[in-house]
Image 1: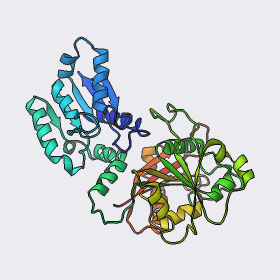
Image 2 (image 1 turned 30 degrees about the horizontal axis):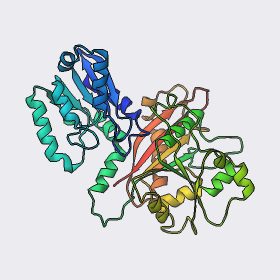
Image 3 (image 1 turned 180 degrees about the vertical axis):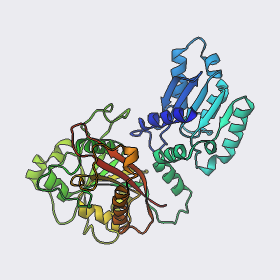
Image 4 (image 1 turned 60 degrees about the vertical axis):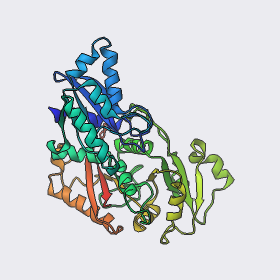
Length: 395
């Protein structure tokens, strides 16, 4: 039962992906007699944490007897409750105050600076009569999911713990790619789009959960892209949406005055333009990234054509690849219409395609790559399903 409540915590946590950064995304659920009576998530960095919002939702529901109800309740959290004072008080103090029957959290906070605080805080909670269920007691799938949703936060913590003179990405760089199953990124003559409508909607969510979007001048001129968010927060399963800052890289070309008047990108944004000598040259992109990230960590999404995407990969300037792969033309391998996602990846032919995709990207990286998420994206419009593959680079 507790795994079910933790799974709900993950759903809630992801609602805060837009504005919780650089804090982790966290969801919390309060359960009384096996019934959910309160929920909360961390929505904005510096504001109330998930546990506080969950407790407040119970207080609002039971204003007169919330103390008694909370003392009879269990609290589930997607990440270890904080035990230090930052912009907000420690959540462990809140848990201690209301004397919950049980605390269960899915993954520990990897920040070693908290070790002393957490030992003291959890001892106090335990001595207060609260049963504590640690991540080690949960399933491997739950722990993997907890790690996946906060991989950006954990990456930043790992950088903080490294030596200052070590050269590493200053922030988080995600290269978004759309291709056919053969890795071809050029749209075929008969297709307006490579991927289906649901995958394209998912890309809007991806944009909203990044701070900067890098593209190239050729992509802007050829595609006349808007690169904005054209869905509501509710449609994207987010509490808030925002359009990332647009950065356009260019070398020999410039925009004409007429293009600046007519291209969509200038109607919807005030993009920054960076001139670089040659994107294919070693370290040509590094100075741009350093400039973009000089003041604070940034989540950077690269949404560009094959040449620029390849340059980021070849120069090893990425943390993750989000690859949307169309299954158009793959019907000779298998029938995709009547097969479910959990069975889909059991098929040896699918695994072979995934292996080929991984090898394709591995050719560009000095690091070991690993598929950390795969998902079948079905379209409601009867279009061919797509595969969404998230590939992570080892730290």
